[in-house]
Image (cartoon, rainbow over all chains, first blue to last red; front, side):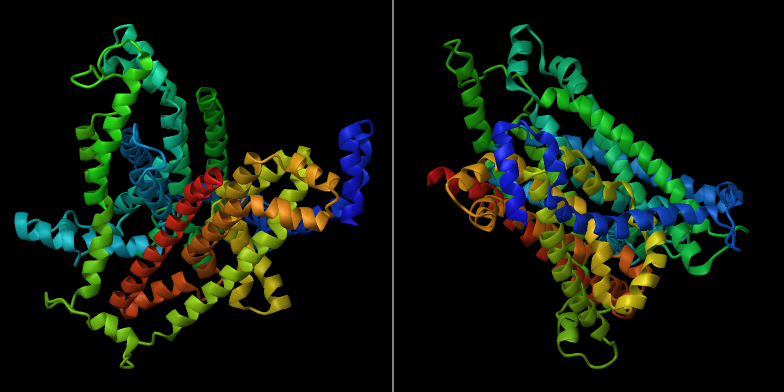
Length: 305
Length: 302
């Protein structure tokens, strides 16, 4: 069946007189498994997740659940999420951009580059349970770095303040989050950095520009859209991250953890289906961020051609 | 890593510095004290940044390794914990971990099958017959990046009540959900590979030489896409082995959920497996990198 349908297309492609007819080919059927799969396991869950927030406990449609977004613990969770995501995105972007800068002028297929590329792809994906283990071993209460700092300065970094060990509080998440944000920055920003053409540097130098001037007048303005685009991507990645936080923090504190609390123990907020409302809230933030991201990416692509 | 890297950096940059002024053709000898210009940093700056970054990133991993060799809180080191799971004395039950690894590997196999049997043919079909659908396909495949797993999970819980009533509440059924999470990672390398070849022209050439469609797919298209497909498979494996969110909410025992469970009983062995998984992922990604550059070189040579 496929063979017959496709020969017709091959014929048409050359004559291109009957482009309409290809719409009725049997080959359309070939798209159904993928379409069915995506509808069943992407569209349906996404719609259920968001729609569930609009149903009351008895099953009638309501907007009352949205009141949950005003609940102090929920507000605090969103604030925590924004704090951790913004700080780790900005920090990760600056450090990652520096690493990209350091790799400029090295051979793209050289040992250094391929190693850093591979390491970045691994570490950017490392945002799970294992990352939590690594930081427990580093700066947990028995961590090697905490013990070292204690023996040298006499300061126990896990007893600063009154909230217990650093790593098990919301701001403590920033360090592990930086650990996967920086490699992600290297992966997403390096292509833009490589887009800086050597000729621009030569042209600027011919006109008497210093290297500082090159960066402030040419390099940074050209890279700005790509940089802020990457910041948004890092933010989105940190904002939607769950596993690391879940392995470190038992209670709530950031939005994904609030969703977990709502799914496992249900209402402290007083309305039904709060998990759905939280899912909607997260999705709204993510959609805004990703739309802005794709806009900036398009701006950035102008210079890579 | 950093020791070797330091050696290669100055070498690479001197050859580059030598090339640039020669390209400007102003006849000056390019070597000594040329005023540096352009974007590339000086070798010193580069080395400082990369060494600092290396320390920051190797630190936590070394801390994990150090942790696995500790003997309790005594301050001594040894291989006690490595022997512990090889010769369990019965105080800690390691079987959930091994079952979790088996479950994760099963999910891996099914997810890779989903990529190869559902995603790949769709991509080829769209490329060859419905190029106008390309944007839609790309949008759908990238979409899971925008929808966090934790949001999807809210919807997966009711969906999986139905799935469980059909297939039973088995770990392998997670592959359907994980396959969605994997879509962006599997799509990208294959799409990049497809973009590098003119599949339509290739297949028309093969067809005009009398090849049947199955033959075109098997002998012309798939060999050309080998690199993209292998990258997609490896990335899929890496994502599946690192997946925690969905498994934990759907109460299935996978590698990651077993690690969390074990961490309460025996944090040392949990950390040993975490390091091992990290090394495994690293090797996997190095192999992808090799395929990328090695494949291109061999093509040029032949």
